Length: 551
Image (cartoon, rainbow, N blue to C red):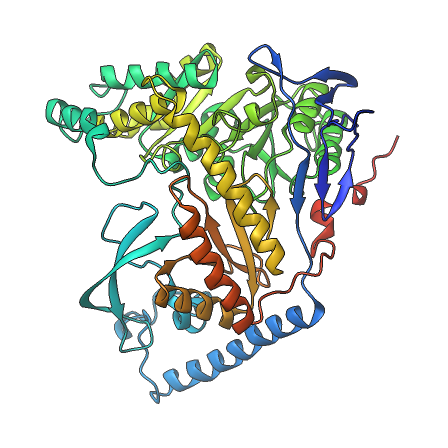
């Protein structure tokens, strides 16, 4: 199999990593059997080993986690019984008595989890924020008098909460200052909305300026922007593939990629997360056997991956995937929603992170909602690809165009990152984000928490496991004026509930130390320091030896 010479640490073990005789790291990678030197801007780019950790929890933690869900389920059935007999008031949506003979609108059993488990800890989500999502923000205090079925606001504002949950990687989402003057001017000149699609009266000079800038930033031929990041995936993938095509999708891909793949009508096959042997096995089978029944060759084979996976904090193994896609003549579609602006020496994403040629990726997708402090998304690549999407994209034909002030905010942020504003502030933010990420991850490791993902990823999942601890973790931290995002089933596997920290360049060392000090105390209080440096809890996802290829 084609393989990358860049180092990789998975499950705490070093894979395919070689050192030069002088002890420095090799910057070469293997592509279709040929070792090439990674290039960036015409110069060799030496990048660090690929270091990722997915550690297994102790057995007793998993036992108590499943036991907690089991007890919660038993009490859920008991409470449903009491509601059916009128002993307890039912606050959930129910069928009207006069429609009892109709096809049910509300599926009672399917809503069991939401009704009996989610509602008990619902206060940890959808918290109302009433300021810009900078490193500090303000929140409206709310309380519930009926166990989280409804909330009421107290009128009190919780000031200066440390924001550890927003995707504000470069600190571009901030309160108004003089640097945002151009956004204000565009708002005054163009207004807020466009009131038309790109195909009709909705293409402005600001859209053309932004698209040219995106193409320059990514070092590709052309780009097209859209008003919604989710729709950039879900509405454009169906324009690229259809019936008779094959999509190979990473099992941890975002819902927008999954929806786009399903809407396309193409055949979908899933490969294990970041597992190159799993992907190559599917590619080989696709080439050898073709389509089911007819055995005709697939019209297209499209590989769907993300740059940074937002629930795992892992980074795509791009050099290996590029080698495989060239070997088997497939196309590569990469979603850089979280990686664009946040990784790479100058923030240009995973292609720059690995020092690769931008032409190695066929379709670039990204969003402006994270590193650029705005909204919307883009598709970029070859000019003929973008010209095709301008005609066939459902977003271009039916969705309203991007708001002009939004486009100007993206332009302003991108020029700052590229240094076109005449300063090095953008580069400093990229470098500060990398420093903050490494510092925060290192400290969490030293404290003994189990954290997932790549050491360079600003998305840091901290494993909590037990549902009761998920609620206690978020509630206690909010009392300390620390805002965190906690995530559980069905967004994660049942036994892998977690807190997801998003590091920002706007975070000061004092703020990070305040959070780390609180986490240290919370880890002791809730017994969350499970790390024993064991192997992955799901070795089949990350251990490539589980997919042996036949000769």
